[in-house]
Each structure stands twice: as structure tokens, then as C-alpha cells.
Length: 168
Image (tube, rainbow, N blue to C red):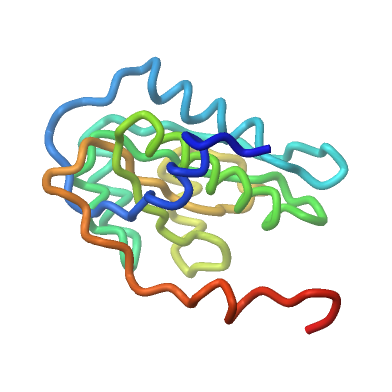
């Protein structure tokens, strides 16, 4: 059963695209990646690999490659999520990425998911971080301290609009 603190993280987490220059402790980055490592995985394959990028020049290079992740240049850390090419790589990688986002929020950090899978720039990201050419880019996750209060959550559908009992 989900405790109140865990539920609060999931219901209050927001995407953050503006960060302070304060660095994120290595121990916090390790805790975030550990949460990703513990994600649900089909058949317990655990195909994920995480590249933590804190070097400013490399983050700027990654930001320049993406379509909608220019803010990666200004965050103190970026976690690049890869998966081995397995049957359920995308499902597993997305579960791991969601865990990263929730763990960052639980630590009081902001984060934002930048898409990777099937993007035309995926191969360039693989090259920049030296990942094997056979891996699949799932996401780039910006991590840092928010530079301003996070905006309220965009309107979500009401529970009654999305929940169905016994049939659709």
C-alpha cells in the first residue's frame, strides 16, 4: 500500500525547466538512480543503464542535440536512460524513468523528462555519452534545484472520466 508521503510525491510532482546553479550531491544522484534501478521490469530483465552527466560542457552538448531539452544546459545534472534492446525495453525504461522523476521530487529536487526513444537525435546522444550502439535511448532527465516555484499542475481529467469498473 502506498503511504501518504509516497502518494504526495506522485500527486504533487511537476516538470521543472529552470534550475539554480547549486550542484546536486552525488549521494542524491545515486539515490535517484537507485530508484530507477528498482523499477518494475518485464520478466525481471532489468535492461536499463543510467549515465549521469554533471559536466557543464557535455550537458550543453546534449541540450543542443535535443528538440525540446535546451534547459539541460542549465541544470546541474542530467540522467540519460538507456535500455538494452529487449522485447519490453520501452515499458521497462519508462518505468525506470518515472521512478527517477518521483525520487527526485521526494528529495526536494526538480526534474523534467525529455523524450529519447525513436527520436532522430538518439544516435547522437548515444555517441556523446559513449553508450553501446545497440542500446536504446529512452529519456534524458534534467535534475536540479528549481530556480522558482513550480507552476501548478495543468488541469487533469477527473478520476470519474478515466476510471472504468468491470468494463470500459
